[in-house]
Image 1 (cartoon, rainbow, N blue to C red):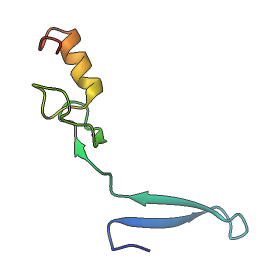
Image 2: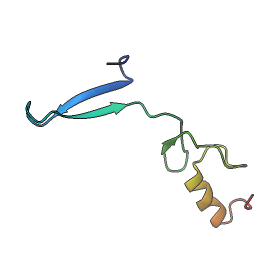
Image 3: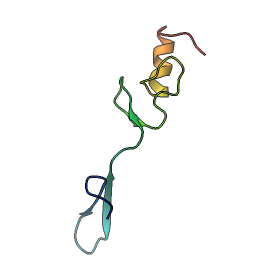
Length: 67
């Protein structure tokens, strides 16, 4: 196991299933528009706090000109 609050492994089902679910802190930054966590947030010029998907939506709606 890694440090507390960074990763947990939780057993799922019965003891014989050997099925596990991993949970860990998301990397990157949170998009201010959709709250998706990603390393690609802020990669669109002029939209420093949104993910590429939201940047595309903002540009499509006329929020900023296309690069």
